[in-house]
Image (cartoon, rainbow, N blue to C red; front, side):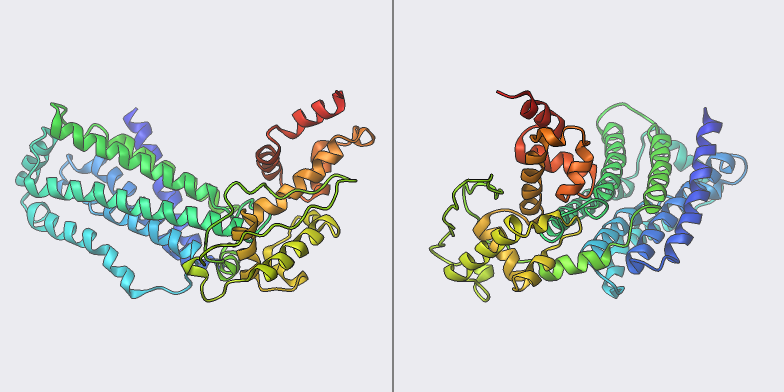
Length: 411
């Protein structure tokens, strides 16, 4: 079992080094790719050093003991910087980022004077004491720092990813491959890994558990972390231009209509409803400099209804906020403001709500009964099966297949 684990760790290390090289040479999302390459390289180096320690440290080479232990202090800062570079987006390295290496340097300095510079017999004695649970106070402090650092950086990364998801939903009608759900999964895997580390430390401090029992699992999870990034890197398209466009068009968030109904396409024969625009008693502070008045907002809402209900622009699977803004014409910022404040939903929800209504009509039409749901969905403007299922169920309350069965079954 130990040989199998060591083999997996070694394979993860070499695969990671190759991936790190490929990332640093990637032409798209250049800064984010380089930061990710540094992260993958650091993880791979830790795995390689862990393999060397397991094989040779106690076979006459005590200098290999804990030689890779400072590297984990780089993982979460690099992951967080990668997320920020990809989602804000950031194109140039900021020298101030080097401050994030201070915990790594501090731990390296501590280990140099407390362990690395010690003679071989002293290293073996310290390692034996550590495995028995006799941890030095300075080491305790750095272990706590390591867990706190992980929690802090992972929290920042998760907040940035959620903001990115909202921003992309405010600009694009199709979010497949650009909402970074896969990166959310990577952050979750990393969080679980550090959860294992935290439990290990807590057990060593609060109970009679002795030894570094979780270390093999942590190393295996780190190898899986490298393989996960390597796999996902193969299909992730260039993101920074899309993130830049969404960031530039983003309207500051203000108050939304409480209880406002979701926009919908009127069935044939239904009377034209009055356009209702929310009149805010006090302007939201973030809109004070560029706030639409009631008449302007009403005109834009009417224009949006025309584009959706008459022109059926929602049938364009690649439709963006800028496309509708150009058609009105109005700035993307103003259109985003109308959607967020006066209609009360994101651009993604607005467009896919109309697509869902169009698909409902097609699914209920007996003349379309022989056509597949996916074919009708693509005709309605949905760009992927995942978007279809999530958007339709959110808007209608049932899946497309359930709705078709109910609609064709009759009263």
